Length: 430
Ligand code: NAD
Image (cartoon, rainbow, N blue to C red; front, side, top):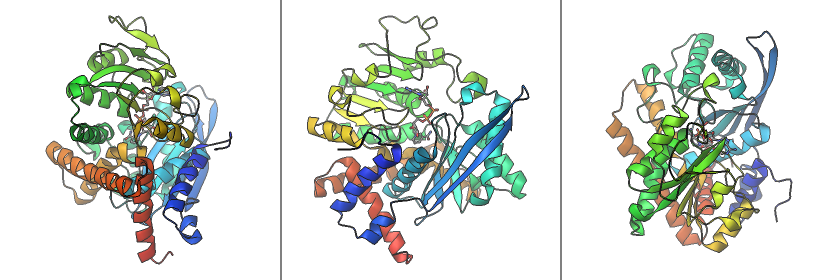
């Protein structure tokens, strides 16, 4: 069993080791997946508007670039630390391989609570991050993107700072930018859109009718809120949603448009982070709605459970109480290896993060190619290419799961590790 001291990175390693054993990899091959190629750390010094100073630990982890430039989001969160960023970077390397786009894996983080910063201070953090890591970042080196508590406005400040510091025009150095400054149509909805395409394909194959399926979504940010809209529009009944303040449940279904109105626009920064949350009781005058906690939301009766907030939420403690038949992981690392084992025994079908949320990095790749070529894709182009790329990833994982008689998580790791190994072999790293 997993030791009590399990961390995001030990959880990654547990899964990786299980797959390495199944693939009968050599020690030399296994060693390539044990540690990131590079770990960059710094302390960002920020002067607050009241004159006080903040020293914020900041990280850029570059896990593997055998298949292309490092790629992965930057997270602003009080719990972002080296271990978590390492784990997220490893997952990115597997993810880009699963959907077969020409990138490696990386991730960034700043340990801070952006909800306590003004908009101007958030901008200072964004710019300081680029100044700290600019030598390690670039369109052909390492291309960041948004993640938890970062958005297109922050990507714009980061690109601006990079272009000033390097005296260059570098639209492809970062993705998730605003449409008016090198962004791609469809990047904001991409993570949810990719997960939606996979879910639709699975429900179609099993001849399940969305009109008869209920969904619970934890997290109402970029990934979760857009997913709620897509599912609602496709006829699914979204029975519960939540954010960091708590959640709401109605067995008859919740209209995400109404939730959005209460919560305010997604993707807001600083000062606006706290304005209106899903469980803002005073504003939430909806019929038949019950308020629930973020623990309760995972145990509700439903067909499909979508964790779309943080990691480590489905664990050995609650996995047995999960009532969903499907779990679609829009969040990274929501399920621990121990929980995986319990869910597998119960027959719960888990569609793992490295597949389920790969739509975000896929459209980031489209944005990167548009940045390099100067072309602009249409909404139809982005949508149809995303569907093609993510469903190819899904099919590769499904085939591997069938052939090897393993879970989709193990199959996805297997597909990803093999593709990374193939690149490392031809490059002579082995
Ligand atoms: P976000 O900042 O836009 O939204 C996060 C949401 O989670 C917010 O609604 C927040 O209130 C909620 N939340 C925070 N703490 C919570 C808690 N303790 N319980 C319940 N909800 C909580 O972030 P996002 O970009 O939507 O990212 C969410 C997850 O999806 C992360 O795991 C991220 O790594 C993953 N992801 C994001 C992308 C992307 O393109 N943005 C791509 C792939 C994966």
